[in-house]
Image 1 (cartoon, rainbow, N blue to C red):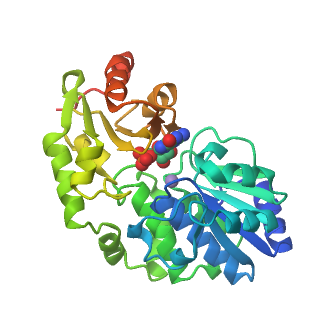
Image 2: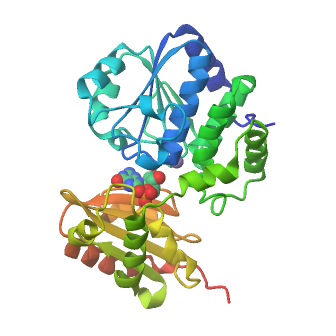
Length: 344
Ligand code: 5GP
Ligand code: MN
């Protein structure tokens, strides 16, 4: 049954903590994506239905593309309302940390969460969770925090209170973390969850359309990136796309405009690792994707100040684009042994 693989003791303790609390804060990682926003909103709806006073407090505001999700406009971001966020966190009786494994992933929120007197619950699917929470529900094999959260909700016996808007939020993370059920999507249970969410009224086709809206300049930037800024390395086994600040300015770049771009080069059969680097104020944001056993999380943690999953990772490089590219060129051959065999 869905939810049976969630640790029973954690579920019992969690049920008690929920029962005893009145005020809840839910948080997620910097630059929240569909899974981070979808899971926090879904949990907010569930706990609100149970009569709790719930606030979502995030390091950054959710991207434009997710603001249509029910409840998204009420998310409070530290980047714009620091005092309010600090007060919400300090007053909370229970804090949920969703879709991240380490406090450095919540940036300026980290000291507030660390200091908070509330009990903390981590629900996440990234490798190697830090042990800062009172309850840690960490399932790295799970494709999304939303799928894991659905299981936790079932294990708590709360499946009957999932309504259509909660289902839509959960479906969002499931879709965005699997490329609309393209990668990380071999688990049969995932389709049981998806079927359940569809029965609850989610319009998957419409949701897909809304999640994949692009502006004209966004579309042109992505096309330009592939056409003019992609190069192949390691005899065609690796792809690198770089966008400098002039490139971004030319297309009126705003955060999120290149979401998904890093996956595109992997459609070339020989390409087993794809790297996308773009200039952010003060650092180079690095994103990596791979096929098979090629460990982009290792590369990101060893050389680009980050981490992530085996096949999807990222980091921040403090330095010039030139140096970031040189570093990549230098270290990639060290990982050649992990390149999967090309299927003809
Ligand atoms: P993306 O490439 O979409 O930004 O991130 C893919 C995955 O890499 C994320 O889900 C996260 O696990 C990881 N990741 C991205 N950026 C960072 C970072 O700066 N630090 C760490 N530790 N992980 C990151
Ligand atoms: Mn996720």
